[in-house]
Every structure is written in structure tokens, then in C-alpha cells.
Length: 83
Image (cartoon, rainbow, N blue to C red):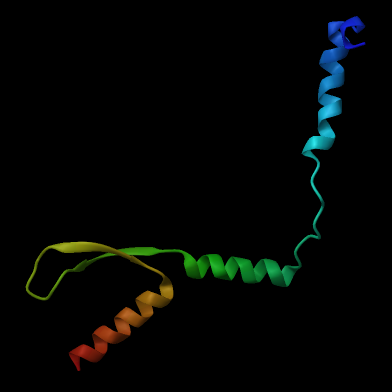
């Protein structure tokens, strides 16, 4: 039966028949609160890179990447060591 159809009909029909194969189950849209939480998580997970001295005697600096929370803890620990 397909052999009897003109080529133009096949070109038009095949994409239409393929649409259900790509259909996805619709999921409910996230609420505003969920969107805000996701955005906050992404901001927290974002790495911040800085160049810091490897040790007190070295002039060479090393690139270190950490999250915002990790940098807060690092700076707090550095202040404690100085006192």
C-alpha cells in the first residue's frame, strides 16, 4: 500500500505519524516557591574561584574553587588561626 502512494504524500505523512513517538507526559509546572528554592540551590552550588597563597612562605598562588558556604568556613578558619 505504501508503494502506491506518491512520494509527496509520504513526505507529508511520515512526520505527522512520528509526532506521537515524541510526545511527553506533561508534568505540572513548578510553583513559585519551588522555582525560588531551585534558584537558591543553584546559587549556593555555584563555584567561586580565587587565587590564594599555597602557604605562608610561598609567593606562588594556587587557584582554588569552592562554594560560597565553603569560602565562609575557610575565611572563618583562617581568622581563628591568626588569633
